[in-house]
Structures are given as structure tokens and as C-alpha cells.
Amino acid sequence: MSLSHLTIPLQSRVFSIPWNISASPCSHGRGVFIKIFCVSNYSVTTPLLSFRCLFVKLTHRMPPPSTMRSFSMTSSSTSVLTSPLASPFYSPSRDYSPVVSSSSSSVRSVSSVAAAVSSSAGMPSPTLSNGTSSHVASPPRRKAITLDTMNQYLRRADYAVRGRLAIRAEELREQLSNGDTSLPFDEIINANIGNPQAMDQKPITFFRQVLSLVQYPQLLDNEFADKIFPRDSLERARILLNEIGSIGAYSQSQGVPYIRKSIANFIEARDGFSADPNNIYLAGGASSAVSSLLTTICGGPETGVMIPVPQYPLYSATLTIANASPIPYLLDETTGWGTDTKYIASVVKNSIAKGVDLKAMVVINPCNPTGSCLSRDEIKDIITLAAEYTFMIIADEVYQTNIYEGEFHSFKKVLRELQRDFAGKFDDVELASLHSTSKGMVGECGQRGGYIELIGIDEQVLEQLYKLVSISLCPAVSGQVLTELMVNPPKPGDESYPVYKAEYDAIYKALKERAFSLFNAFKEMEGVSCQEPKGAMYLFPTISIPPKAIKEAQRRNEEPDQFYCLELLEQTGVCVVPGSGFGQKDGTYHFRTTFLAPGEDYVRRIIAFHKEFLQKYS
Image 1 (spheres, helix red, strand yellow):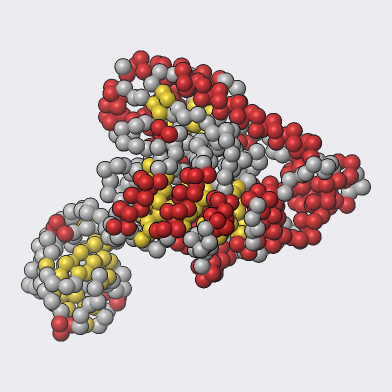
Image 2: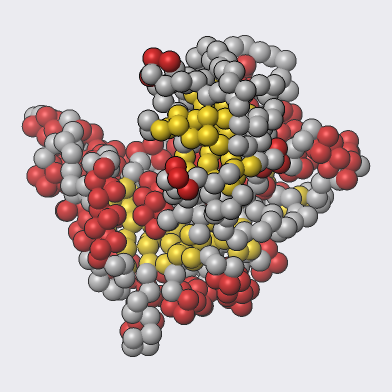
């Protein structure tokens, strides 16, 4: 619709503005969005609503009425504040330089402009130049919060681990529980997520004994307590209760001081260098710590954080919600998913040249989803880059005890060695190290325990981080207790040590055997290649998808590897995650699977499905 003149009442003044206009309806159904571009310096985005006033949002300061300029607009300039649907995290053809404007070019045409302002506000309705009213009755109120009016950064975020396949798996599980016998399988295998105790991994006895005692302290006074519980579990529970009080009460926002001291002792014993409890923050799992840290360091779309490809989608999703820019760096599959320092340096320099404010680099070691482990030299090279280009290292080390070949090297230890050997060169390196009770031989995902250690961080930034974690009051104290038990387990000579050692070793042995059993199965499958498992809980095989299957995936508007994984789920009940959910090199296809499930049945299901899939689409 084209209007030659419109009179707008604004803050008790009336502005008469000539314009041409195209309008689009508000998604909540209470008016229209009108975007006005000034011929010269100013622009206005105006939602016209049947409320008591007319809201005008300026992209520049509005000049006084005496200097109001003429505004004009063409339909090609019209936009509605919507965002595109989520897209795969990484595409080699995508420009990853920061995008400051987040407005969409989506346009919805309307046959008329609803420009009514409530008469109860004592303000006249907008009028056309011929004096006639343009008032149109507002449609009935629907919902204030809709898909188009909610936080669009959240809408764009994608978390493939619990995405479409996981949802479909739960639907199929429900069908089975309701007695459906039409499916070609009788159980769902959730190989899509590292959730050990959802499979057959049993809790560590000592940990649960102490947890039960701190949850119900009256057990300590029971006359049979020393006959039910080992003496060291009773002693540990009394110490923790003495330091904590009731675990039903809030702790310090940073975590119980005694538990932070235990973590510091663990880090010192692991690395051979001292650790400061004041630099340690307890968290509700490593994911919570990541969210707090990225919220602290991200300041908008110009903020860049380097993320490995493939990566754990926690990072890309959190950055999307924070409206920051992920800067992908590819891991090298041909070298066992290793890092290439020269290539990473080129990514850093290229990002800085594009105007990115590069704040941090995420390193997952051992790696989720690839199962690779970094060598000491690779870690040293990354720290050297951080010192040269001044960015923080975020070391996700939650799988540090899941090592099946080689040795785990912590970033903290290598950094301290470099600081010792090269005085002054590495003193300002900023490092955040993460650990969790969810992985390793503990596998207590649902307890939500973990911590982050911060090294070399500006004290004023730490104050702001403390403020942020204080908003949530404190991490669950039971999760903090479990973290203390993880870093301070029974030791040789303790009454509980033999049982603890036997349980720990049995879990480790089972995980390693399952990892290599699945790896060997992948080696025998046509069109599948896989790097040898060195750590973590996953394998990330490359799969060759026939052109006919790729064409069918395109017809269904799906990524080829997602199509493969959906077919696998529908035919076998095995739920895995497509590689596109983690990011992958262009033209390659993968899926991530855990090796937590017991037995060989699900492996046989995958092998049989893959053979039939190739036959069907070849």
C-alpha cells in the first residue's frame, strides 16, 4: 500500500511525514511493523499497535520536529524481525566474519496498514493526507510469546545430541512400551549420548555410600552404622557434614571452600604444580561452567570464539544464544583428528583481519566426538599461539580418565612447564580448565557435578564471573560432594580401597573392550573408515553414502548423514548422531556413536543395516 502522507502523534506533538510504505503484520496479531528509511541520516522501525501509545524505535537519535526530514521507503527495504531456522554449524562455503545486523529480509505483504492508536489514550488516529482515518480494528489477541517473538538466538541454536533423532527414539520407545509389535526391533539403544548409567555402568559404591550418609545424617548415629558402612565412608561423611552443614542449605556461590581445597590438592597431585582454591569454581556439571564462562567473555557478534570441527554442539549452541561468532578450525582426520598449528594460526590471522575480536579457543581433550587425544607438543603449540595472539584457552578435559592409548596431558601442566622454562613469555596466558563427574569411571551424569579452574584471568573479570554465578546462588551441594569424592577417592590402605579399585578397573576395562570391539566392526564394513579410539566415550566413523541415497536425502530436505541415521534408527532401534550435528569437512559424512551399550547385539544391528542400506541405494 502506498501512502502519500501520514500524521503521527508522538509525545504530545504531531509530525506530518510524507512517505511511501509497505507494511507487514506483527506475528502476535496486534498490529503491523513499518520500517522507514530516511533519505539521509535517519531510520525508524515502527510497530503500530492498538495500545495507549505509538512506539517508535530509532536507529539514530530522532531530530527535533523543526528539523524532521522527509522519509521514503521501498518494499525491498521492508523487514520483519525474524531469524532463519537453525543451519548446520559448519560449512566451508560460509563466511564466518561477524555480522552486526541481525534483522531478516523476510517480508509478509498485507492488503492494508493497521495504524490505529487507542482513542482512550486521547491521541488521534493516524490520518491520510486527504483527512480520512486509516483506522483498522486490531485482530483478537493471541499469544504474546510465539516462535517469531521469542528469543531468536535461542531459536537458531541447534543441539543435535538431543535433537530430532533423540526425539524420534523416544517416540519409538513409547510405541514399544505400549505393546507395539510392528517395529523391526524390541528395544531402543541410545548410543547418541554419553550417559553411562543409563546403560549398564554401576555407580562406585564408596561414592554412593558417602552420598547416602550426607543426605540422611541420622544414619551416622545408627547403632548398626559401622556394620553397614565402611569406617572410611563414615569418616568422610562426618568431615563433609562438618564443613558443609546441611547439604540442603546454600553453599558459597563459588562452592564449598573445603571441596575447592580438595580439588586444588587433586590438581597439584596430577600436574606437579600448585593450585589455588580461589581460582576454582564448582559448577552444575561442565556444561554449566561453559555457559557461565562464555556469557562472561562474549560481548556480541563481533566476539569470536574458535571451536574445533567436529565439536561438541554445546559450544556452538551456547555461542548462538550469546549472539557471538563461532570461528571453526578443522581437525585433521588423516592424522587421527590432530591439530595443525600452521593452519590454526592462519585461521587466527584471517579472523583478526576480518575484524573479529578473538577472545578464546576451545580445545576438547580427549575429544568429543572423535575420541582423539592431543600430544604434549600439540598442546604446547596451542599455548604458544595463545601467548602470541592473546586469546584465552578453554580446555574441556572432562574425559581425562578415559584414556585407552597414550597419556593424558593437562593444559595446566604444560602451561606451568612453559612458564617455568621460558620466563615471562607465557605469564599472561589465560586458561580455563573443565572437569566433570559425568564422565570417566564415575559416570554420574544426573548428579551434575563439576568444576572450572581459571588461570591468568584478570581479577576484575573474576569479580564479574562471581557476580554471574551468584545469580544462581550455588551449584547443587550434592553434586559438589560427588566432585570431592571424584578428586579424593579411597587410597591404598583405606578400608574401601579394594572395592573401589576393583569397580574402577572393571568399568575401565569394559569401556576399552567395547571401544575396540566397535572399532574393529567398523573396519570390516564396506565404505566405512574410523580412527582408532584413544580416549573419551565415542567413535566418529566416516561413512560413504551412495549418490542415490544423497538424492533421496535432498528430496526429503535432510542432510545425507541425518537421513542415514534416521533410517538406522527406524530399522534397528539404534540411535546415533549425524556428523552434520558436530560439523564436518565439506563432502564427508560421519556419525557419532558411544560404545557404552553392553553386548554385541547393537553392533550386529549396525552392520546388517549398513549392508542393506548400500544395497538399496547403490
